[in-house]
Length: 406
Ligand code: 3BY
Ligand code: FES
Ligand code: FE
Image (cartoon, rainbow, N blue to C red; front, side, top):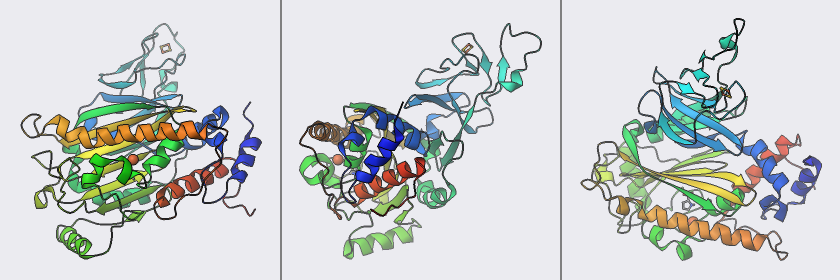
């Protein structure tokens, strides 16, 4: 039995402005708590509606221990379900992508319509009422082509995030984009270490030579851009093109457009676009990056020519899977309009470097020598926000007040 009073006591031990006590990065009970309090309760970004181009296309994945499936139904609506059969609970669709006219359980062939209705169940007798056994839905929101899901019965309020992200992301026309590359990095680190690393660029100048070519690694913590002539010019240019700059943020989401390094148009090894046909056909794709991110597990960078998504999924107390996805315009042709290696190299290298850093962090944290250390208020402002948000959610889940006077 998990001892939630022990978890509450550990939360109280956390010193504000400091990293978490060791148990938060390795204790199996806290891992189980995190699945319940965070991953089964919050919005998660799983991918893009362009990955489901036709009715019946589905994307199945497992959140912690819970398999889900997100699909496009016959009416074109993106819907999501718990990927668990209503008969005896077998997983319906294997994790990954596919296309099916109906979802047929591999075990005893109960068959579901794409709208979740149970259409066929053999040998169940005359008084069996299939309408009582539809697939259990999960919450799904699609914002300008980005898919968010929530497994909770009552999800956190979403409309405010949508109202800010939608106008910023819509110009990229992601419904007419395509997924051209996907990676899953198996990282031997707790999901919070993966995310803390992903929320700061304190390490970027030293550890990400490829990213540092184009990415302003000294960027102000909230991506609100440095003041100065370049920002004034960028702001004027974006305004002229009707592109909202931001930054906009809420407790669990952030959206901001920012300029890349001088001379860089895209995140590539020479700063030049890697796709000839831009996603956003404005100023030759010279639009900086639109960064949008949600707690607990995701960030995206939408560039003029491609979009990169990063979403992390906890799979064990010391294991996290990071899913990376690259999108380009649907009509861009590989080998003609883009070279796949050049498209993916910057984030591929960056992700591998970040995996090594998260694993390095885990090894050190596991040692007897670990005591929580202080975050930089400037360079690690977003890490602090992430950890403070986590602590607030954990407290709320335990039924404690958000702020405790100690
Ligand atoms: O949130 C981000 O944008 C990631 C990308 C690089 C560093 N990190 C802050
Ligand atoms: Fe799905 Fe039996 S568990 S049909
Ligand atoms: Fe990094």
